[in-house]
Image 1 (cartoon, rainbow, N blue to C red):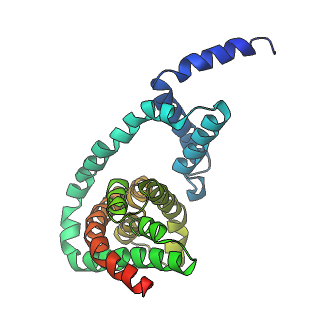
Image 2 (image 1 turned 90 degrees about the vertical axis):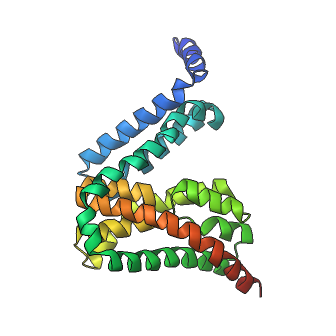
Length: 247
């Protein structure tokens, strides 16, 4: 054995038994990803969430660390999702006067975005021969994770699959939204932010906040309203779509 390798292995075994390992790994991975993101001048393709996930997965695979062990420490980050979401109330409050002047366009955009997300996901999955369980898991993918997982479980989907799909949707939205909106020549920060929040929930909102406070506020509004709208829409529309698909 290489000199010092045995000792290093012993140190790793000791650290792996500590719940703080998961938290430390998560924070270090994100800091590395954020540095890379900044060095690349905030290029959307270098999304720090995507890079951090890849780093964490690589570490867990290389070290053979079970996900359960990792999550014992990382669950603190999971817990902080709640306070972080509530904290979005501050930029929302500061932009309240702008929200009031655009209620009708926002509601129309919300309805169009939510319905399109659900119908497109289920329709594409059906066209590709997916099972009913997979279609149910896909339906709420554009809502925030807790709401999406609850909806999926309620209708017989796979909450774990839904969680992965929600994360993938958020990352894709954060990466591609800039190019799509530029192609459509949509320059308004409120419109860009609201679209990003509706389509890509928290990850999209985090990206919008990096651009401007106004864009981030509208993204936060879109994320919150889409979560509520999806929670109402899917229970009503899903049985109808499954009945139509089964006929």
